[in-house]
Image (tube, rainbow, N blue to C red; front, side):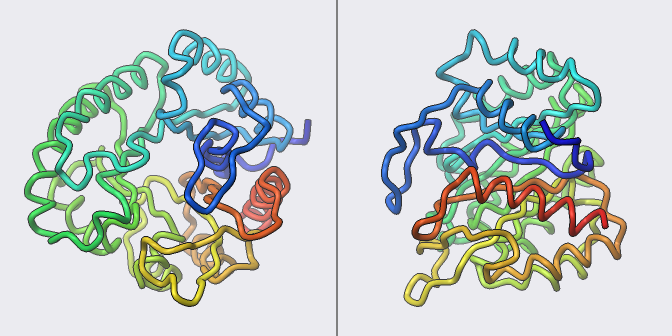
Length: 288
């Protein structure tokens, strides 16, 4: 096991979605299949002490995941957060029934003493839907979650999931005027919807950014819409401008988690190699 990297650097389990049985239309199934413990073992091998767990991959092992999380948290300086809603959360407001699932994982977060839960309101398939119509239907769902979160003392971070411009989502978050509601800012999703990640980090009040998801992707000609193919790269070698983004975070003394996440990989890359490089890259860029 490596020495621990800085506690503000983490990794999200979606990185290994193929190992958890999920493939996108750009991918082939993986022979290697994981349980939650395998992901924790990989995090230990990289010296990572912060992980975010996609709740969609926990449902197949509902009887054991709480015990696995407790075991991992028993080691010093460990933090776990749930990332709820993959693949499309409330589907831009068209699936209000998903609130029950979201509240369940908020309750489990409380039971386990987790400090934060990331949620998504939709995904890239919602991007072209009218923004204000979606926000009208989403507002009461977020309010219901926020009431529970405030009661539990758990922060909620809403990810820009290529469904909104990040600036639109931030304005929506500010409406609630709650210290328990903020953003999980995904830098590649910022890029996918046509915003500038570095400039956004300079412009935003990062006190309202509770977590950053970092991934590096390549912009492919003919795939410029958010629903196109945005394959992941080794960190620092794609088109997101990660190095400049990390410089801004250092300049602004950002201390909340920065979490590596990998989507579908560009041709011939191997996910465990890219994931290890990603963690090392973030630790180096943020902390040296």
